Length: 156
Ligand SMILES: [Zn+2]
Image 1: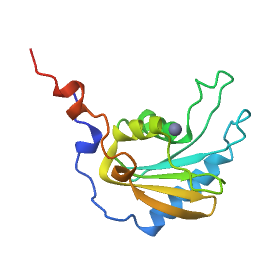
Image 2: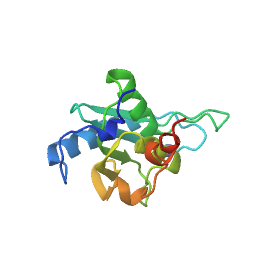
Image 3: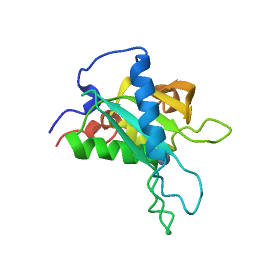
């Protein structure tokens, strides 16, 4: 079994270069334009920077059942895994037009926990600007993770 992506060594950066931040913001903004949100009317775009250097974007895709709705953040992460396998995530950008910056929901934070490096940044953005910068660990300080979940069980 492969190591958890966030255990892999990758570039350690305390703050992402402005070029990567702007590119993530641009791709998240563009993905947001494809949001399928007929029920909430709340279009969200997201983008993740993988350890490979590739940025994957996603948008929210709602469903009439509501429970089958997939958030933009998870769409971006799933696109990353589908394209190049599990990768460590160094940055997540979330774009909305809400008056208050929109953080990822708890479900998306849990999915991000599977891939985020400890220093992963989460940028809460409006369409053309970063409004808040968070460390992933500030938004989800004690995630359910392999080391405190199934992998921590004694081996028979
Ligand atoms: Zn979510």
